[in-house]
Amino acid sequence: MSSKIYVGNLPYSVTDASLKSNFAEFGNVASAKVMMDRDTGQSKGFGFVEMATPESAQAAIAALHGMSVDGRSIVVSLARPREERAAPGAYSPAGYRASNRPDVGYGTGGFGGGRY
Image (cartoon, rainbow, N blue to C red):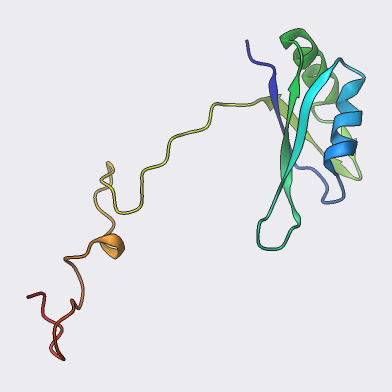
């Protein structure tokens, strides 16, 4: 069983330190991270907390799920493993993405825009 917890629907005022302190009453917190938008620096409204033991993670989930924080009902659950993403232009079940294929489009030759 995992001890990594997903915390969603967080108010934008929540910081790493406040998230850690809220979960500390249920056991030792290994890490607490609020996800931030890299362009604006503002919170994305969710984060992850890693507890020292799976038992303390379950206790935190049971106690905090649905709790109101600054008027928002937070979602607390076990974190799912990160899904693998296909590289840009790579094959996927949906097919190729034409925007990343070098052989589709106007090409490099002349005004006619031919491929050859």
